[in-house]
Image (cartoon, rainbow, N blue to C red):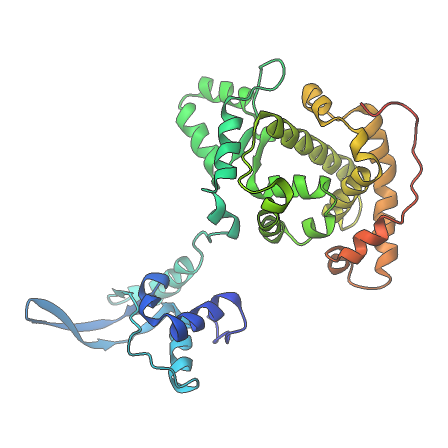
Length: 341
């Protein structure tokens, strides 16, 4: 399915480094091999079954692991005597072979990947934010926002609390899907309003990693969210989601996610201190005057992104701090004089 991808990628570099530096931990760290065979022979020896002969052996998942170990021994001259690899061997009978091998290969290589953000699910910051979301009703106490600390948590909770159609309708009214947000969403909202659109433009996982790396510097050591912080998070979510709707309705041919992040960051840069996030929380909506600004400024932001790219790859340009510096040079006029909140 793939040739050896060398040690350039993150995964293969990790395999190589474990072989070199921690060979005794290769077994617990590595996922192992998935193999198929047409026929095997086994004998018992001292109470154990020993595999003595195999016909039609194929590695259907774990080729990069195998090639990395081979390279370590043959090219790098690394001692691999302490390397152990777990393996699953499926013996296929008769006509099943041709049909099953590609399916086993497909399914063993397409399982749900663990994302970088998943590893932070048990950080105390996220645990407390989840706890706050469980009891904090929006004004009027008709609904709540749902912070999905662990990926897939919303659907699990929905299935647990709403086993019948009537209960499901009640759950969807109290915690609608539109009021669910994830860890990567959280980082996107806070970094956009925190005037880091170039970081947001690097994608959900990289933006989240940056957010977590700067958590201590941003809020101080040992920071634990409280109700006031949670309300501000939701307010920023409301502003981001409304900006997304505005930009989507304006129908740009591309770079919409970048335009959303930069429009919101530019708005915060111009007069973020004048916008009351508490008022946004209370209203659960974006103030009309601010909506007019977002409507008017999004096209200007889009044009500024394209113009300052100056023939460069626009997507890559948006990821650079120089793009944000150029955006701050934009002299956008206010569309009206009404109060922002």
